[in-house]
Image (cartoon, rainbow, N blue to C red):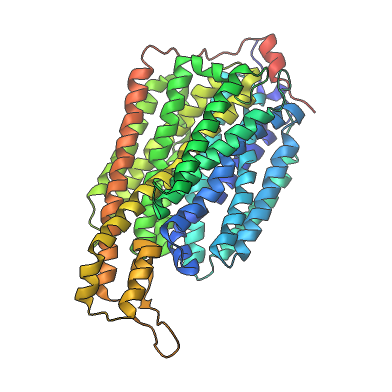
Length: 538
């Protein structure tokens, strides 16, 4: 007989704690979305330095999610979830006090480690305690909804504080939310799944160093060039280590990641589509924030409003998505969602950067948000429901890894492509533009050096050309140079939007054809062995 909620102590408190924990993680992760323009002016950051603010959070989050899932399975999830919230407190405190972009990176790394705990453990706690398939589907939809509302309110929060001249206050709010999460988790029911699980140190090391090397190369390549020896070496080392990770996981008795999960066609198709689709999603959102914030220097609060249109649908549509997950084949939900995301990416690729109207972004960002609402919960449901309940911890951690790998790759790769293209275009036309501006030595040489070192973003954002000494004061940055940088950035991010939209279309094609013939799981969870797997620990 199927269990009922009333027979599982602390189920409601666990759902509340898990949902708030993922909201906290997403608020911390999404906060830079509305602040890229503010960070650029506060820290005089280049394009790659802005990308690193997001990447510094995403890389440790992606790298350690599988390991935290194993630790939770072995030793219990409740205290681990509280530890993740505490790391968020520490990271947000460092970010709030940051005086340089490098210190901001440190804070983001620490907070990213916290998110590496919060994402998989919050979902595993909920999935392990759910009494049946329907309850699990509803809880997953609610969890996904809180993830989305966190992503919606976070840029709005950051934009509001930045507009008032105190962006650091947003991180103080995150600290307060993390403390609330610790208190809520204290009321949750603990769970674990230690059978057959142990720490896989070789797998963790090769995965961590391999991913860090690849993501470093992708990010740094946009600034120093992809053919630089250090970038090429990082790519090679990263790929070799990731290959070693696969070999290790296939041979070890207790792998960090059960690669045999991918023998299930539905799981494998959704896994690939998840990485590509979530890349497209965050690449589009990141491009919008750079376009409005760091390029056009719009009010940060406007960018926060845009993120409300992106993430709001996933929370508003929780009942609809929950119903669809339970009653409509995942193939159609995912395909439809990715098509909407594609439209949200391709549409802005036609925009003119000289048009300062921001309301034109509302419709495409709403389409992007609706597509995300349909896909994020369905991705999680397919992953969780295609594995035995005893593997819920691994399945949830793997799902978060794939989703967040796509998220991490979004700003890293799209930023690399866009900033590289913008810098190349601007430098190709820089000489004639300096000549036409009437700028004389030594100022012309200084302006050329700024363009070579800081790229189009630096020229676009600097109001003056610094003087070489106290006897030669700064002069206004020539309008010709700023317009050149402005238009080169606009053209480059038109390309970024288009690439993101095409990737979403590819994800749609994968789910449309790859899930053909896939049968949905039964809505009932059988008694007996499964009931034991769901039993909470105390």
